[in-house]
Image 1 (cartoon, rainbow, N blue to C red):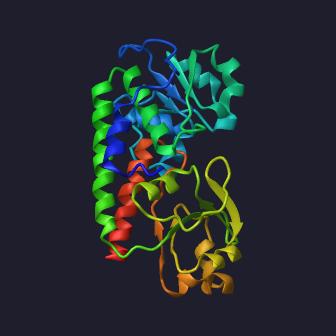
Image 2 (cartoon, helix red, strand yellow):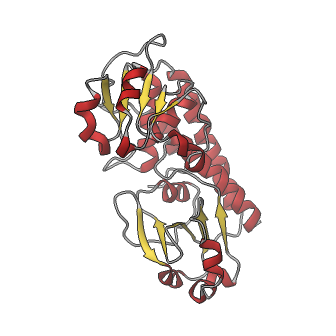
Image 3 (tube, rainbow, N blue to C red):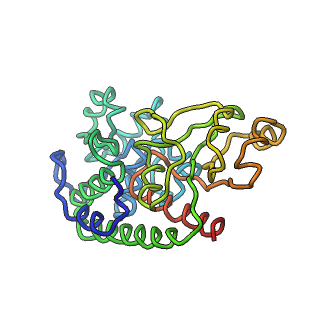
Length: 293
């Protein structure tokens, strides 16, 4: 399904919320919300209700970047090493978790009620599900009007960029992130990156099966089968990769390297919500307008 069409985008904004209801009513004067998921945290920030604590806050500026994480937000540690004492000390009214932290629910519910939300959902397109999550959170924190305005602005921006790109000299795009100098994650299927390509009317150069999160890990030698695509690697890149690739015969002989049809994109959180999708549309559009004009 290509949601990069005006009619569908407007329809998407008008659909109802899912059956997943908030566990408690929220009050602005309450203890606040802890988020153990970055996609949910970034959505709260754009709604004007940043969480009081977030998981792995020290890594935010490396992987998420936008929206900016307020300095007042507590760093709760890594997902596998959560600081439960700090979470309890924040006295939150609600803890947002993803399905991948369900095993921690017994410990977390001793501190506060939990709400399990996921930007991944079987049977829903990645972006439509993220927009539904944004609407649920907006309604929950009492910012329904602001939430709908944000989604409408994003939808209109997406449509504007799609029209701009339609007039460029397009070719299929492949989006990857480097694992090391011999392997990449290549994105398709249910990934946020692939969905943005689809919304912008761009063909994804990788049409093979991918995993649940929308990517497969492959050796760089397999990139030779892609032909002369536009190859885009999303930062951050592991240290030493650039030097290793410069001396790699396999890399230097790839079709898109020989034609200089490749480049780097600033970090975009691939597991993110609508704010990450918005950042991806903006960065990718800017890249393509400079490369394909």
